[in-house]
Each structure stands twice: as structure tokens, then as C-alpha cells.
Length: 193
Ligand code: HEM
Image 1 (cartoon, rainbow, N blue to C red):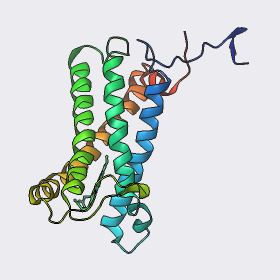
Image 2 (image 1 turned 120 degrees about the vertical axis):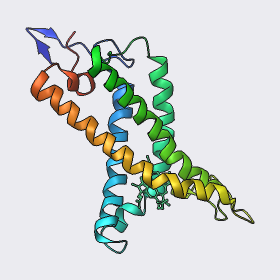
Image 3 (image 1 turned 90 degrees about the vertical axis):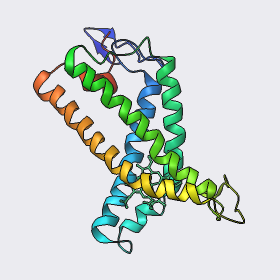
Image 4 (image 1 turned 90 degrees about the horizontal axis):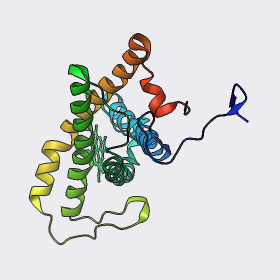
């Protein structure tokens, strides 16, 4: 039994609280972090080493994993809205405003980046069947604008999202190492009260 001075450690609730993110938010956050890492690792390796390298191992699953990420971000937005009055605050002042805007931009990009790629898959002549489950059947003729839109936005916005994620990770490091305000513990630590 985990205990603090003989008292059992309080279990983490499913819902968020003003001091900590709950189990559902954490499950969504860390699953998405892993899958997003997979996406960028694959595309980064493809850029550096070319298609016929070890990048192929990651890129093979790019579309199915991207589809899962789209579903997870939709669930995450619904869950964040359901908990909006009862979750850790971003803080006051310019840092709080920057944090709120940064998170909003991340949510938006996490929706748009896979969203436009799925739109292209919907408008494509080829059937789209991630993990073997057909979502969009084949068409007789492709819808051109869906391909143009995704061609213009998907890759570019994905890299912008990658930079924002890097900024997010760096800021967590700053909170931990310099400000020591327990920000990481809200998403990763045990419940303290
Ligand atoms: C959050 C999810 C996703 C992320 C972070 C992501 C990220 C990326 C990145 C970084 C690239 C490389 C762009 C370049 O070459 O400069 C890329 C390319 C690509 N992605 Fe995704 N992607 C995601 C979801 C999807 C989904 C759902 C699909 C398909 C349904 C998809 C299909 C493609 C395709 C076909 C390419 C190569 C052609 C292109 O750049 O448009 N991606 N993605």
C-alpha cells in the first residue's frame, strides 16, 4: 500500500480536478504523445534518409495511426469541454495567456492536420481502409479540391505543429527546472490531496 505518513495515497479520479488532470485526460494525453512521436519520427526519418530506409517501417502505419489520432483528438476536445470548469488553470499574466493560446493552437492543429488528410482520403479514387477497416469506398473520379487542400496544408501545418510541440516540451522543462511549480505533476504525478 502506498502511504504518506501511514495514510493511504488518494487514488486519482477519472475526471480532472483543479489540482490534477484525471485518468481519462492522462490516458488521452500520453497515448497521443506516443502516437504523435511515431508520426514525426517516421516523417523525420523519411526526410533525412529517404523512403527506402528504416523510415518505411514507421511510414507504413502513418495513415492508420493518423486516423486514430484524429478520433483521439476529437474525444479529447469533448472531454476538455466537459471538464472545463474543473481542471488546472493556465495561470495569470502574460505567461498564462501565452500558455492558453499555445494550447488552443495545438488543439486546432491536432484537428486540422489529420482532418485535411482524411478529407483527401475521402475525395480520393482509392478506397481508404486503415487497419483493414474500410472507411471510405473507392470513387470513380477523385474530388480534386480535397487533394489540393491537403497538399497545401497537411505537411506544412504538421511541421508547425511539431515546432509547437517542441515548445510545449521545453516549457514543461522550464516549469520543472526553473519555476519548480509542479506543472508536470498535474499530468504525470500522483495525487497529493
Ligand atoms: C496528427 C496526425 C498526423 C501528423 C502529425 C502527420 C504528420 C505528417 C508529416 C510531418 C508529414 C510530412 C510532410 C512533408 O513531407 O514535409 C506527413 C505527410 C503525409 N501524411 Fe500525415 N500526419 C498525420 C495524419 C495523417 C493522416 C490521418 C493521413 C491520411 C489519412 C496522413 C497522410 C499523409 C500523407 C499521404 C503524407 C505524404 C504526402 C503529404 O505531405 O501530403 N497523415 N504527415
